[in-house]
Length: 350
Image (cartoon, rainbow, N blue to C red; front, side):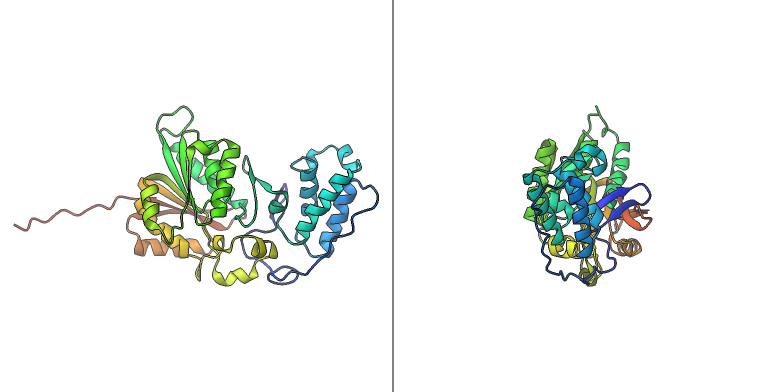
C-alpha cells in the first residue's frame, strides 16, 4: 500500500523491494480479533482513530495510512484531505459503521489496503484490484513515463497522427502499464500477456471500465512455456515493456505478510538470481521488436550490470542503451534497443 507525501515522496507499505521483516518476522501472522462493534454512535474521526491505534497495537504496517484510506473510501473520497471537516465529525450510520469494521478487519488480517478497498490509483487511472493479482507499485509509474517519452518522439504516435504503433506488455497484472500507455497515446494499440488467468480477467475488466478495450488485445500466455504463441501473436512491436518477477528466490521469505500471504508468488519470484523470466524476455525481444524498437524493464537494483553483461554475451541483436533510476534514486530500469547486425561482405569462392 502506498501513499504520496510532500516531504518523503512515496511511502510504501507492501512494496516488492525486500526490507526488514515484519513485526512478527517473515510471513507468520498472529491471529487477531477485531475490536467490538460500538453499541453507540461513532464519528468517522473517532472510528479512524480507534482503528489506527488498534492497527498499531497489532503490528499492522502503516496504521495511520491504513485507517485513513479506508475511511476516505467509505465516505466516497480518495483522501481524507479532500473531505470537508464536517463530514468527518458527523456520526456514521449503523450501516457505515458495520462496513468500516468489516473493511478494517480485513486489513487487520494484513490484507493490503488496495485489496481491502478493491481499487487503487495508478497515474491518472483508477484501477480495480483484487487478490492475488499483483498490485502496481509507484516506481512503475516512472517506467510508464520512460516508455511514453520515447513513444511520443516516434512519428505518428501523437494526437491526430495517422501511423499506429504497438506496445507489448509481458506480465500485465491489473493492466496498469498498458492501460496507462493507451490513455496517454490515442494512436497506440497494445498487447498484454500474463500467465495468470486472474490477471488477464482483471486487465480485461479494467480496460472495459476505462473504455480502452478496443485498442487492447489480452492473452493468457506463459512466455516461459509457449514461445511460439508469443511470437505468432506479438510481432513486430515498437515497444516491449515488462515489470517481470525479479526477486531473488532467497528473498521471498523476507516479504511482509501483506505480500507473502496475498499476492501471486509467480509475479514476484524471479528464480535463484531473479533473472529467470528476464532472460527469456531478453531472448524474445529481438524476435518481437521492430527495427530499432526498444525494451523497457523494471528490475531489482542489483540487476542492471548483470543484465548488461548477459546481453553482451548472449544477445547479439540487442543493445543495452541505459540504466535509469527510480523515485528513491536506485538503479531500477533497463532500456535496451534492437539493432541491425551488419553482415560482412560475402566471399566469392569461385
